[in-house]
Structure formats: structure tokens, C-alpha cells
Image 1 (spheres, rainbow, N blue to C red):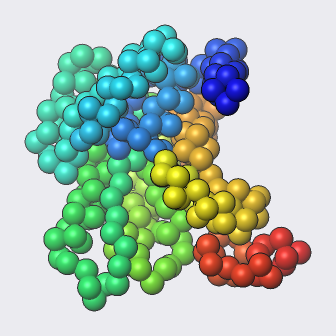
Image 2 (image 1 turned 135 degrees about the vertical axis):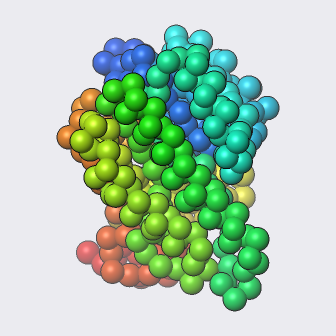
Length: 287
């Protein structure tokens, strides 16, 4: 019965996408960190909206299990690209290949992430370097390459950077991750100003607590965390995919330089946020 209901829900969602105007029809899109979690959800939503999707990840073997089915289901092309985005030569080669194949790039989504939690005084310098390369340096270089291409081809394109609520709220164990995500969101504003005259929009999204782990042992964490959020649930990768698709569509043509927080109200209360909150401290008890 569970499998049947899952099929019915999936068919219903697919049918709704077919009936809807396909927001990204024919647009050529690059999504990094696409093998799983938020990246996979963005790929699926973009494919459902008619985009041609180039899904970048180091784990192409994982993607090959579902991208072909995704493309067939939505009647578009989803192309897995094996690429270490911290390697500038690999990135440049991959982008040149897409230029040659498609003749255009309309959308860039910088989603790839990496983070190590821990106290700053215990952090290794090589870990700082790796987080910097993945979370800030690479997105900046990808935006640079995409911008040059869009300007040369006179494409009124769009870029979205995936940030984090940790860019806005400090925690004692995320000094590196939080500061780099804050830097990416700040860079989003400057790049939006630079590229605005060319009709290129640049925005960011701050996901809150999103259920990205498929592990059963994480279910109690997500359930408990959800009870501490004003709308009383944690987010799903689909929540982020839907928001990214909107920002990359013509329906958002007057939005640029903005960071959209998608967190169910997580950061709204002036109270501690975490799974260890007592029953009398939860948001619903504040009202």
C-alpha cells in the first residue's frame, strides 16, 4: 500500500508539472552538487519545468541511476557531468564543452557544499582551505565564467547561490562554514549590481533545517527539530528546488541581489534553536 501511495503521489506531482506552464522551457542550466539532496531536487524540478540540465558532481555513478529516468519522465535532457569543481581546469573544460554543445548557458546554480563542524582552535588549515575552495572560491569563478559567456551571447541569464541560515545566525562550531556562506551571500549582492545592466540576475537562498539525510537514525532528529520550528516541520529538498526554479524563471524577472530565506520561520523567534529544547521552550508554547 505504501508503494502504491508513493506512486500515486509521484504521478500527481508529475501531472501537475505537465499542466503547469513550464517555467524553464528550453533553458540550459548548470547545477553543481547535483548527485543527491538539495542538488538532486533542483535537477528534478528544473527537468520538470522543461530545462536542459547539466548536473555537476564528483559522484556521477550515483547520478547515472536516476538522471536517465528523470529525463525520460519529463521529456527533456539531463546530462551528468563528472567534475571536481575545486579544479579550475576541469571546470573550464566542462563549461567549454557545454558552450560547444548547446551554444548558450542560461542558468547557473551554485549548490555544491562542504562543511566541517568544530571549534576554530581545533580546525586544521587544510580543512579551512577545502571549505574556502568549495564554498566561496569556486562559486565566484563559476559566476565569472558564466557571466562572461552570457554577456558575450547577450543572454539575460540568472544565477542562484545556495547559502545557509548559518550565514545569518552564529553557532559556536561553524565559524568557517558560516563565515564563507555569509561571504557568498554578500558577493551575490555585488555581482547582482555588476551584471544588472546586462539583464543578468543574481540571487541567493538561505535554506534552514532541510531533511537531506536518508538515514533512518536521523528521523528522530528531524522530527524533534521540526517541533521547534514555527510551521512545525523541517524542510525538504523539494522546498528549495521549488524556490530556485521560481527565482530562475521569468516570473522573478524583477528580483535580483536578494537572499531568500527558506526556513519555515526557523530564525524568527528570539530563542535558542536546536533539537535539545525543552517542551516548555518550544515556539508553540511562546504564543
